[in-house]
Length: 136
Image 1 (tube, rainbow, N blue to C red):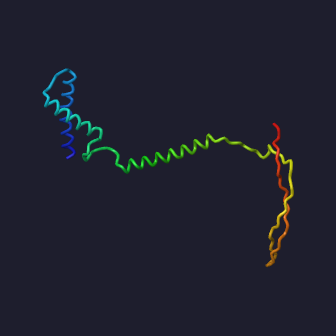
Image 2: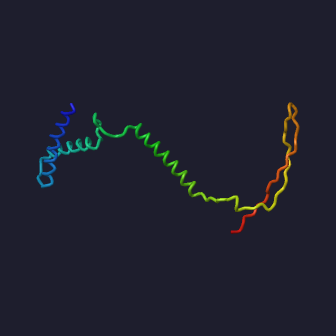
Image 3: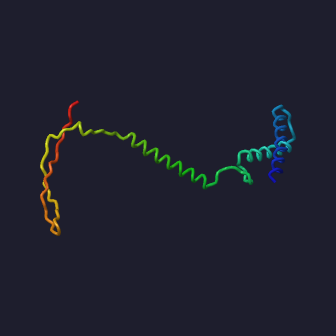
């Protein structure tokens, strides 16, 4: 079947080549022959471009198109997110650039267990509440 189709299109292609060559040379044909060649040219173009609905038609199914669309949307979403993060202003803060100028002691009660007995023990911690950046 495939061989027969190949031979059919080869013979028709030869006819089309001859017709198109004669047309460019200015040779006129009967209206009926010209219409037949136009139909044949359209059929050949559809076959060549995969626009036909035959067994050998090439093209994308709806599922393939949907998968491509989903992949494209994911890539766009990732790209937009990366672009927004890239454009967001950032400040780099290094711990060595700052000094504590005011600190205070904070006390809180921490539950402690000894055996089966739990009691609250005060824990004191010094916390910096005001910083200043070194000049330079």
